[in-house]
Length: 272
Image (cartoon, rainbow, N blue to C red):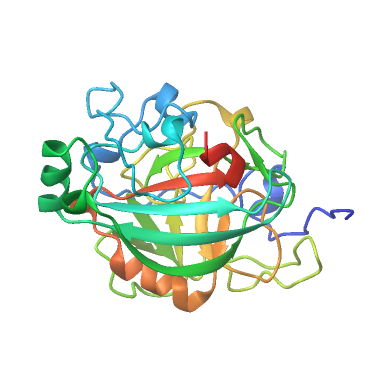
């Protein structure tokens, strides 16, 4: 299929973007959550989330997270009690499924005692949601304008949107103008409302700030503005999009005290 890069709002037209969001003014800063802070290496993707000291967080054997191979499982932090798994249907495909897995702190401790397996460590799966990812699929080395979503394990610490906070525990930046988008997407679909709700994915961004903050630790050439946002019935520039009801559910469920992360990529890459 021939992909047409969407015409987007003025804020997005400032540059050719790898993500779905344009440079925000970043005027509203959130209190930093050091648990989600990543240094430049961690922001690159496959190295996984970082500890507050900048060292890789200790990994846990997430053996019962379906579809994840040993390489991917090793990147899931030990203290993560919420893991959003985004599985692309193919390396070059723009459709995905999303499942939120949860376990309690007691489950995590039981998993430590049992070597990461067994009933005490079991993850409880939520429903499977349909989603879109980038128009050209997935990549382990995301670059600005490549129309691919980054593969990796990333923290989820900050949210926002054009609409008021629906009841999330994440820091939430409500900015009507800051999250306005118009124009059409890759398949001619209208983009209005896509940023009604967003959850920032901590790829090449400064955790603990508004999703509109345009700080790029890896440099602008590595893209940014990778979010969960409301689906517009077509592929994205780099984000993952869900229906508006599912975005509200995600926002209301994610809890920073449970150290949520997203594991995202095509099925073949996640199975490694």
